Structure formats: C-alpha cells, structure tokens
Amino acid sequence: MPTIKAAPFDFPFERDSIALIVIDMQRDFVEPGGFGATLGNDVSLLQAIIPTVAALIGGFREAGLPVIHTRECHRPDLSDCPPAKRLRGNPSLRIGDEGPMGRILIADAPGADIIPELAPASGEWVIDKPGKGAFYATGLQEYLDRRGIRQLVFAGVTTEVCVQTTMREANDRGYDGLLATDATESYFPAFKQAAIEMITAQGGIVGWAAPVAAVLEALD
Ligand code: C5J
Image 1: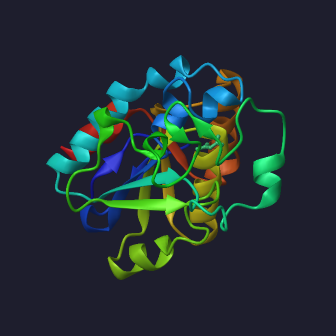
Image 2: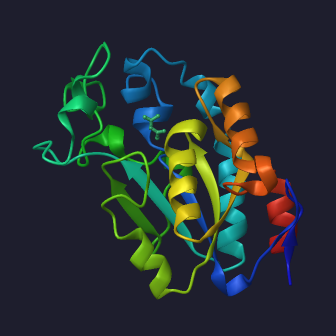
Image 3: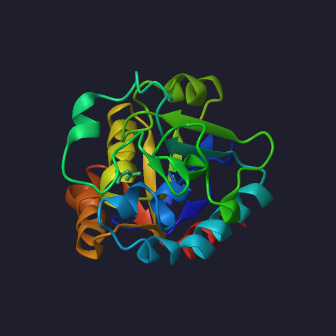
C-alpha cells in the first residue's frame, strides 16, 4: 500500500480512495484589493505558496487522482450570508460591497475566481461554499461517498480558518485528512504553525501533516 511519510505517523492510502481538496485559492484572499486585504492582511504571505500548491495539483493530475477546488463566496442577494458574517469587525469593504475586483466574496464577481495560476481543469469540481468549512451546505460528503473517497489531502488558505475547519468537519465524518504543510498558508504565521500542531497532536486527533514533496513521492 502506498504511504506518505507524515506526522504524527505515516499515512497509508489507497489510490482509488484519495482526493486533493484545494481550499479557497481565490483572488479575494490572495490578491491586493480583495476580502483578505480589506481586513488589513498582507496578501503577499499567501502568494508565496502558489508554486507548491501548483506542484501538488500537478502531482494529483498526473496520477489521475481527483482534485476538488473550493471557493468561499455568496449569492449576489446575500441570502446565504449570515448578517453577522457581513457586519462583524471594521473592514474597509464588507462582503457584497463593490471593490476593485467586483463585489467582495460574491460568486459571480472576478474576485471570487480561483487565481489563474491554479485554475481548475475541465472536469474538476469547484465547490462554492458559504461557510468556512467545505462540508456545510455543499453536498461534499455525498459527492465523496458516491465515489468511495475516504482519504483527503488538504491545501489552500487560510490554514487556521477554512482549511482547519474543513479538516475538522472531514475528521468528524470519518475521513482521514492530511494537511500539505507547505501548500497552505495563513496571514498569521504563528496561527499556521499552531494549526499544524493542533491537527497532529494527541496521535493525530484531527489528522496528519506532511510536506508536498512527501505527498508527491508517495504518488509516484
Ligand atoms: C477566511 C478562509 N480566512 N478561506 N477564509 O475568512 O480561510
């Protein structure tokens, strides 16, 4: 059985039951002028992982394994956006406001698009999710179960928000999750490190973690 060298211990997997989930690599989080920047964050931190995420996606595609992408975004009428999510804090622009890349975090605005460097290939599922977790209100569980997928490799942003939330949702549903540590990033480096430690502590209480090179070696 192929095995990824991982923490807190090796991650064995079956080729017909593993998929990659790339979380929210959208212009709104990664490029200037989007949601992340309106909250006062330095988006260049997130731009640094684009090549590693691309390499990981490439490895899954070459191996003929499924790649799933997510986008955090809302309907134009905001009917799927809880008022608290829009009103919380003091951003320079709120969800739904007009920004330099169109309306912030709205599904049909250019800012909600996945960055061109990581554009989904034809046939890859792109999940539009209104929450931080990709299982909430999306049909992801049914999609995975129909295909017999039980093991998930996670990449994307931000580590401690949408990535970790989705890993926890997956863990509670019985999937094995592995975080690709150099294909995920946070606006707060200390939070990324803490999230990796939280996930792998206590015998992998949420899941596993490994660098992209270890994942690619096991897919070979
Ligand atoms: C955030 C995300 N950070 N994709 N979303 O609000 O992690």
